[in-house]
Amino acid sequence: MNYIFSGKPTIEDHLKMVQRLSNRTTFLFLIGGLIIGEVIFTFFKWSVLLLIIFAVFYVLIVVLNYFVFVPYRIRKKYKENSSINQKRCFSFGDDIEIEFPIYKVVYYDDAVYIISENNQAMIVKREWLESGKSWEEFIHFIDHKVVPKITPKIYRR
Image (cartoon, rainbow, N blue to C red; front, side, top):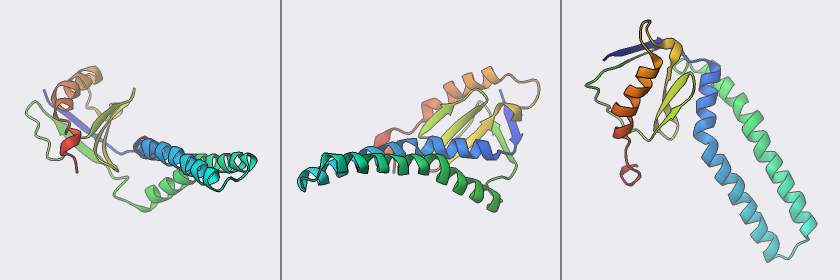
């Protein structure tokens, strides 16, 4: 069965992709910073109140960065970079040969993100599917043809 998609990703799609790809990094940065702060405060035997103030300030900075500054930078980059918001055409068939390593497939109600690199993903949206085809059949196709080709962690760069 062949599936043909054609459409242009919106700013919300791109922002959702970037936030999905950066969730783990943000979480590790938050936990790592708090652990390093705790070690430094314990080593120098500084006040616990100062440690709490530092932790609250640090968490506030990370949360502001994730929810305010990063979306602002992503929106600005989306508007400046014409290659991000170009119309895309994808064709999936039974004899699909994927030329790049796939690290993860993420499902949303209206989209599938096929993640190939740390900051790259193929966005396939339900509304891009040509008429007459079923989204559920496409999800089933992805489960059986693309997901088995996910590159194991030991072979990743």
